[in-house]
Structure formats: C-alpha cells, structure tokens
Image (cartoon, rainbow, N blue to C red; front, side):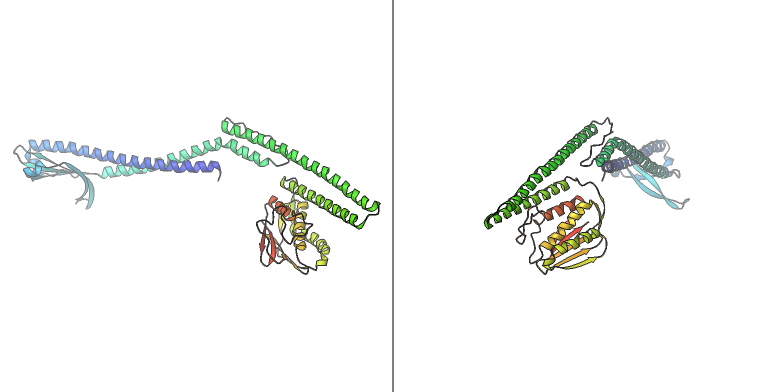
Length: 421
C-alpha cells in the first residue's frame, strides 16, 4: 500500500469516528434543548392556568384546547406535602383525528384559597417538536456527509500535493540501474525532509556507482593479472616436460603441477563469473526459450559422457520462457546438465521434464544430498569427483536468482533439480 493511501485511510477513519461522535452529541444536545424549551412553555402555561384558577374557580371544571389540554384533580393535604413536579412524554387519543398523538405531560399541584389542593396535569402536543427534530436530524446527516466529503477531498488534495516530491523521487530511483551513470534528479521542494531524502539518495547512488566501477575494474584486472601468469606457468610446465628426458617420477610430478594449475584456472574463471553475475554486469537481455538452449547444449554433453551409457528421457509439455542473458542461460543449462551427467552412475538415467512454468532435471543416485548445503560455494558431497570445483550449482543458483527464478533440490528416489518461476 502506498504511503499516501495509508495516511489518507487512517485520517478518513479518524475523521469519520470523530464526526460521528460529534454528530451524535449534537443531535442529543439539540433534542435536550428542544425538550427543555417545551418544558419551559409548560411552566409558563401552568402559571397562567393557576393564576386564572385562583381568580375564577370555574376553570377547575374545564379541560383546555386541543393543542394544550389540562385537567384538575383534587388531592389530599398528605399527598400534596410530598408532591414532586414531574415531566414525561406520553400519548393521548384525539377523537377528531381518531388516532393517538404524542404529547409532553407536566404534573404540578397548587392550593386554592379555600385550602383545597389540586393536581394540575397539562399536556401539550409535540407534533411540531417531532417534525422539527426529524428535520434537524436530516439536516445534520446532510451536513455531516457534506462536511466529511469536503474534509476528505481537501485532505487528499493536500496530501497528494505534499507527497508529490516523494513520488518523483521513487520514479527517479526506479531509473537508477547498477553499472549505469546516475540520472539527474529534478525534484525541487520546500519540504525539508524530502529535500534531505533526495540528497541522500543521490549521494548513495553516486557512491554505489563509484563502488561498482571500482569493483568492475578490480574484476577485470584480477582476470587479466591472474589468467596471464597461470597460462605462462602452464606453458613453461609443458615446455619443461618436452625439453629434457625426465624420469617417470618427475613426469608424474609435472603432471600433478599441470593439473593443479588447470584447476586454478577453472576456479579463477568460475569466481570471476560469479562476481560478474552478482554485480549484474550481464545487462543485455532477451526472451530466452530454455527448451531451445537445452536442444543446443544436450547433444554435445551426451557425447562427452557417452562412455557412461546414461539413458535419456525427455518430455516437453510447453516452452519455458524468461527474460535474461543468452550467455548466462547457456551457463545455467550447462551446469545443471553437466551436474546430472557427472554425478550419475554408469548405466544411470537422466530425465528432463519441461513445461511453461518449470524445468525439472532428474538423475539417478543412491542417496539424497544435503538440501541446505547443495547450493553453497565449494560444497562437495561424498560422491563428488575430485576435479569438481564445487561452484557449478552455486553459479546456477545465482543466475536463476538474478532473473527472479527459483532453483530447488528434492529427492524422490532420484536427484531432482527444479527451475521454476
């Protein structure tokens, strides 16, 4: 999730909760205020009725109007002594309307000049109050919705404008590639944090490019400085073996030296290849159909190991295609096939199963390998040949990872290497 969307979502939830709480509080506050105003009207009406009753006792036999009903009930002195004035909501049946209408009721008591106490019950219609509260509720909901939408719109616009320098910086970072010069960053901003972040990104990218160039130069120098003397020494060993008559023991020693130098040359080449792969120096890419690469490499490798009489079984259920470097694809296929052929016993089997999502290479074996170590550099199983560098599978794993492919090992009675997307 983008930072802008995350912050906007958090603000939206918070605003919704706060405004909802405010809306509920405001609604009940208005409701309380309207009810209080109704009660004040009832108090005023009570005072008028009592004053009229004190002046004219005949009012005690009346019941008021349709909108403001009242009635009198005589009560005893004892009941009047503990009497408490009260307000509550109720309903009253209106014969004209033939239905019950909501009313606000007030009960109070007073004493006539004769000493008789009366309970006064006043009822006033709350239809207008209910209509007003309903109108207030709808206006409140409309105001709440409009205000929330406006706040969210303004917040999003402000956030989007504020995070625009970050978007430009991320777009620029996507253009930075290993081995290529750092592109210019045009990201003027008044936000101090984004400005410092941009400066730090440029500085780190420049240092990374410089380190890459230095490492690349070191690898090229190492390749030249190591390969040349090794080749010279091997040449001199060959000349020494041919120049003078040597004893059998001396020839054996020279042969061991020659083989050791050969291993050193192969080791140097393998380590340099690994470094180039990990530093992403193979930048030329194209769509690789691995089926065709296997078609090109497999016949030669089968001829080389023809003496082992390994039977081949191949199934193509689709084309395995990925974007990569053609040279590295050949190295990947060669290492996997050579590993399977070298470590198969004489008369063993080699199975190659290909579909659009995976390539499986299986070879016969007597026991499973250590799954956690098989792709480590210089790992040697007990059955490994003496001239093995222990780098073939490590190189294959590194090539696969550089193109976001997975290379796994399992055992199902045969050694199984699975390359998949």
